Length: 149
Length: 261
Image (tube, rainbow over all chains, first blue to last red; front, side, top):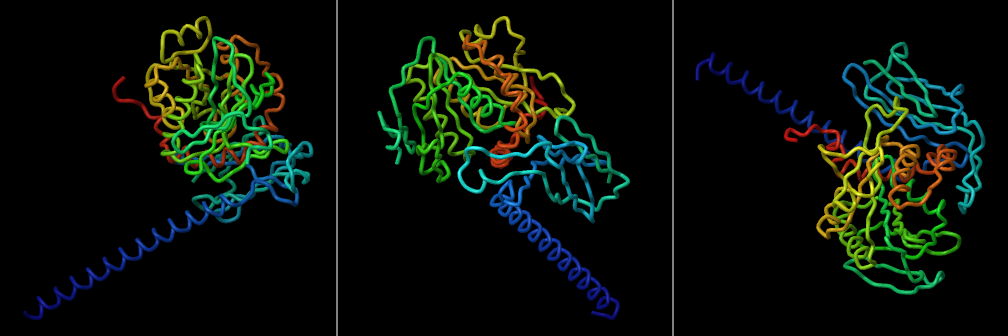
């Protein structure tokens, strides 16, 4: 093996090492992301949809529409004038007052005794949001938030 | 465990335990409305309203240690099975708001069909939602139907329901429909445009207009619409749980375009 062949061999070995490192890193990231998502699902399953301090968690969904995402939030009995949408990094903070106090009559325990006055939720978004690129539309206690990428 | 409300008769079908609290006698022609958690909880919300509006009595329960979550329903101090059966006049309602894994749904479908057949039910009505991508903007909702026999189609004569002619169905009702077809039971599946991921009492009310025509009994949906917001609040947990099952059962297929029609 002459000097040129040796240099070529070393270059190929370094390329191979870099590829292996990139592959291991991406697989590790993927595994961590999957683990995090699964953990979030388990946490979410065990997290009640109400809080004893008197707020409810709304249902929501996120749809990717290419250049933008749509976030739908179900806010029955919410006073639409009080809906607050704030962003920090890739998190969206939702708050809305209820038009009237909600009580789950007939339910035994704290769930039936608590008086609810508002909605609160923190929604993780797939990217950091520019609040200038957001449009909010509310109808019949349902909110559609369009966020441009 | 169910003795607090009295057990009239009980039986095991496979891994399912059926407990009847009182004799079930249905007038003819008899109908069964079966509700399972699915798109927009349209069937579950509708069934709940029918039970209340028609004043049906709780007559039986269905439980399974294998396929259902370890849950006891406590209602008015009575211990009840997770799947509840109500009846009155010519109508029997199977009410279930708990999601089940797919292999459990297959077994439940077989058990339900067997049970309804032996009860001599003449027609089965399934009411579900059809996910509408633009539901947020929709004011009037369309209802489609699928009927398994000419006798079943007869019941929808002179209604504004549209036949569901081409497309895919996925999920709990698709499984149940397959079993009902095998058993040759007259069945009508009503599909009303609705939200997929949010409880949709408006869609349930629309569907009930057709149920009312089918069973030939008035069902007042005014109260359901007045209470719609409170129902949406109360149904958040059931909807959250149902969504996990819907994703597993490839509910997205219902919005796919078939290549061959």
